Length: 237
Image 1 (tube, rainbow, N blue to C red):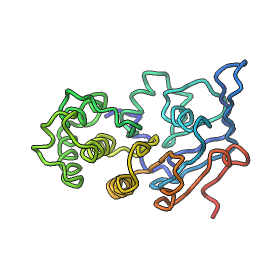
Image 2 (image 1 turned 90 degrees about the horizontal axis):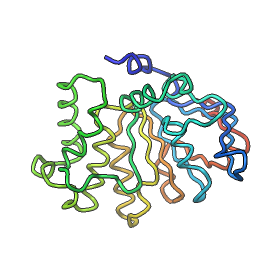
Image 3 (image 1 turned 120 degrees about the vertical axis):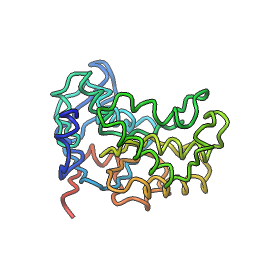
Image 4 (image 1 turned 45 degrees about the horizontal axis):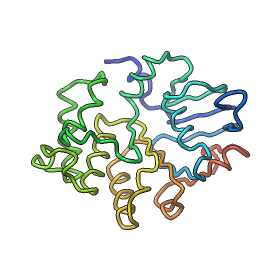
């Protein structure tokens, strides 16, 4: 089993950021500065902010997709700057589940194939993986018949469930959701949030949105502008 997977178990914090500074280039007007932010393990966090403020950029920094920064980002106890890009990809595959804004399902693959696709990069036992998949699909009410259908034939609600199953598969310690409810109506948004949080169990969830009506579902509600102004330490009550 991959050592990166082993070393992040039982960390008191899923995320710890210190003195983070990011800009696209020295000529760019956009900067992202976060002095201090910690997220406890198994905590559900609602991160809000205006469009274009840098929420998605921050998620890319946390997940190791974007690497141009100064400061310290530790995810599940791992200093992301100490990993090369291949190691970051492996770390992300083993430890982080991502739910995208448009779900990013491949339309001509079946629901099951969409769930399994990203897991080819994981270094976990295949028998355990398939047992975990059956449990997740049962909780999400994804029948064996539905799993065989192509993604393009599924309703929006069914696509939501497949996207959640893909993120949860393999029991990631951290789940990142980047405005996945922006195209949904009010009732569908509420159903999606309940579905995600009820299914996540012991995973930490960082949910990004500009829709403040969803904030009450989460343990913590944090504004990106507030993080940049003063920093947040979730160890402080």
